Length: 507
Image 1 (cartoon, rainbow, N blue to C red):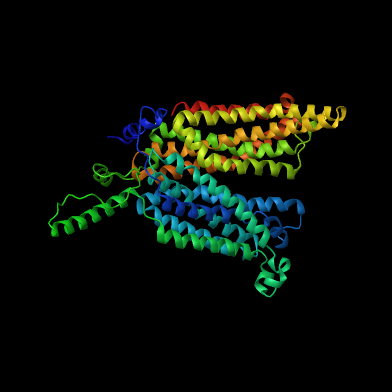
Image 2: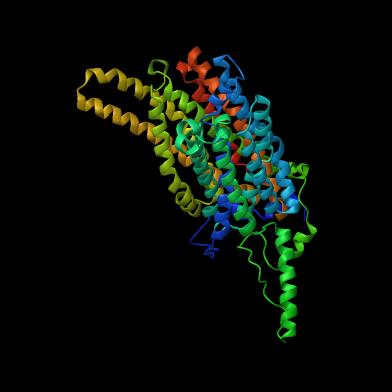
C-alpha cells in the first residue's frame, strides 16, 4: 500500500462529522499523568522565550549597543526575531530526528538547550553574545513539534479533542509567567537591596536573576520529564511490548500457563495497537520530505496551516494598532491599558473555551466541518472592524449631545461590540486544535508523525514571521492613503481568511 493511499484510508474518520447517535464508541481514558508531564515540558519554552520581553529594550540601552534612542527598538527586535529564524531553520530536523531515535531523548535535549541558552543570556555583555544565545535558544527549541507528536500518539479519535487544546492553554500560561519573571526580577540588587544587594554578580549582571530562574524552572521540567515521561514513538513502544510479551510468555510457560498472553504495555489508545499494527510498523520508515509533499492532502493542509497562522497573527497585530488609532483616522482611540484589559478578559474566558468548549463542538460537528466553521469566524471578526470604527465615530460624535445616562449606554455598547469581536476571534483560535487533529490524521504512517508536526510548525513559523510586518504595513497604507475609506486592510485580510476556508474544503 502506498503512503498516499495509507493516508487516505486512515483518514476517513476525519472526513465526515461525528455522528454520536450512530457511532457509540468507547472513549479511551486520557493518560492524565503523561499529559501532565507534557504540559510541564511545554511550559518551559514560552517562559524562557518571553521572560526577556519586559527588559530587553533597557538591556540594549545599558549595554550601550547604540547611542541612538530611536534604534533601540531595532536591536531588541533583532534579538527577538533571530529566535524565530533559528527555530524555523531547525524545527523540521528535530521532528525528523524524533521519528528515528524517539520522542523522549529529543524533548530532553531541547529542554537542556533551552536551559543553557536562558542561563547564558542573562550573562551577556554584548550584542554578539545576545544574538548567539538567542539563536541557540531558537535552534534548540524544536520541542513544540515533538510534544505535539506525543499528544497525537498517546490519544486517539475518541479523546484527542480533549487533549490537543491543552497545548495552547499551557503556552498562554507560559507567556504570562515569563514576562512576570522578567519584569519583577530584573535589576534585583537595586529593587530588593536587602535580599540581593550583597551579591556583586547581580549588580554587574542585572538581568541574570530572571534568566537563572527561567533556567531553574527548565531544570525541574527536565528532571520530571526524564523520570516520568514514557517513550511514545510507535516502533519503540512495539519493541518494548514484544519484549514484555516474551518475558511474560516465558514466565507463563514456566508456570504451565498458555503462552499467548495479553501485552502488559499501555498504549493509551494511541495509533499503536496490538496485533497487526505491530509488525506493520517494523517494515515502515519515516516518510521523507519529498514523500510528504507529494501527498495532495498534506499540501492542502500545509497551505491551510499557513493561512490560519497568517490570519491569526495579522489580526492580533492589526487589532492592537486599530484600537490605538484615533477615531478621526478610523480607529477606536483606546488607551494601552484599555486594550490590555480587553485582551486579558477575553484570554481568561478563553481558557475554559479551550479546555471544554472545543471538545463539545468537536463531538457535535466533527473535525473538518468544525475546522471550516472556525476558519470562517475569522472572516466575520475581520469584517466587524469597519462596523466598530463606525460605532466608535457615532459614539464619539453623539456623546457631547446626549445626557450622562445615554453617554454611559453608548460607551457600554462600544465595549460590548469590542468584546464580542474579540470573543469571535478567540473562538476561531480553537481551530489550531482542529488543525493538530488533521495533522495527525494526514500522517502517512505512525513513524512520520514527528516529521508531520515539525513540517506544520515550520510553515506556522514562516507565516508568523512575515504576517505582522505585512499586516501592519497594509494597515498603515490603508489609513495614510485613505484607500476605501481606510478599510482596504480589512477587505484584504478578510479575503486571506476566506481563502483558508476554501482551502479547507479541499481537505
